[in-house]
View 1 (tube, rainbow, N blue to C red):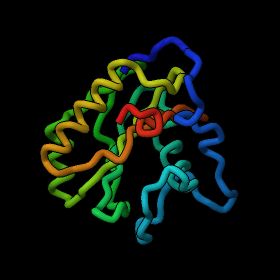
View 2 (view 1 turned 60 degrees about the vertical axis):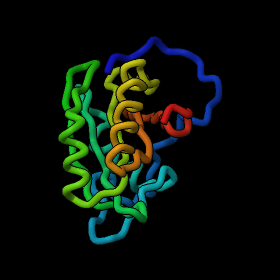
View 3 (view 1 turned 90 degrees about the vertical axis):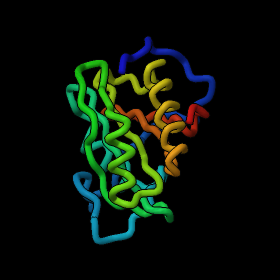
View 4 (view 1 turned 180 degrees about the vertical axis):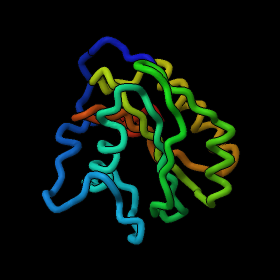
Length: 161
């Protein structure tokens, strides 16, 4: 997904500075899969986990965090890979996988190796397309986050999703 030139935000809410600050005892590499972890943008463990999985990648990648009807973490899977400025996502495969594992919602996360966390026009179009298709099969898109090594843009907070 191509990056747009840097621009000033109309408001600061969607960009979360200090997104990846972790308590020193928390692991940034894994979530404890034995805990019921509610997927929350305020959860520092989730932030660290997402950053460790995608933030430093040299190419764009897409990670999906699947959740149950209560918002509890079920499983995460990397579902898209790309190059320096794009990532390909197989939408029917994503929706089929969500239904097979019994998810009722999911969080989309992809990285921008450029360091610019603003979503591209293609990012916005694809997110809206995924959300519309998900809705048709009874699934909910929690959010689509664009992460870099030190920042994150929330499309939900930015009123895109």
